[in-house]
Amino acid sequence: MAASSLGQTTEINWDKLDKTKFYVVGAGIFTGVTVGLYPMSVIKTRLQVATKDTVEKSASSVIRGILKTDGVPGLYRGFGTVITGAIPTRIIFLTALETTKAAAFKMLEPFKFSEPSQAALANGIAGMSASLCSQAIFVPIDVISQKLMVQGYSGHEKYNGGLDVARKIIRTDGIRGFYRGFGLSVMTYSPSSAVWWASYGSSQRIIWRLLGQGTDREGAAPSESTIMLVQATGGIISGATASCITTPLDTIKTRLQVMSLERRSSASQVVKSLIKDDGWTGFYRGLGPRFFSMSAWGTTMILAYEYLTMWFASS
Image (cartoon, rainbow, N blue to C red):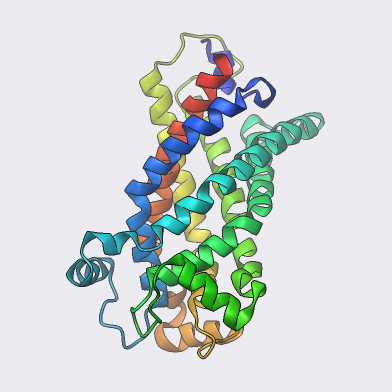
């Protein structure tokens, strides 16, 4: 691979990809990654819904509390629900991502942007579009799983599994109960996805240029370890950027989604409560676990994703 073809390590020809194999093998890989990183979502969610009277207000104290009361299974509350909805959600997301990205690159070509700028815009548009398309399935899964994550914690109701949560939501709110916080979810995950993919697309190209491997020059092909290092670094940068920008909205969304009918509040009331209890720092509850989760998840997933797409694109 010449340096001039480095773009191929980040942009895949979706039309030539064996999609059946990609989805089947990808589902297994992505499920494995979810198993490893899921506990961070539980910790993050508990920190975000903690009240001023809650004793466990740090990640370490939350972990100790979960292990003391529920053991290791407590770190996987809601996991079954998430995995059930993850496969269709991811299929929709990846399909929308790649098709939109290809269209966005073509649309931006006449504007003659610099390569990092073009990559940031195209990836950002694709990331936001993919997130919007997948929200219809993701939000109900998110509502159910988060209620399971915080059950019995800080006064929250207890449930007998995901089906019990679904039955109670339908009984109290009907179908619309599954979409509680939908607007905030779209406002959180779509910009987060846009920022993540935009940062990833542009940071890779900037790193390659810093390494003297710009796409306008020929040279020795970079080693696979170098490619992986650049992609991993891009994943970390993207996770850090996205988590810092969108954590406040994620905190508000999470609180709205886990509230019971009796304790229901509006988004503005949640904002006032956070400011009253912790000041503006309250909006960044769970930032540490969310930053770690998004960076670790993004880095692991992008390495699996990039090599999976290249493998099946070339097979």
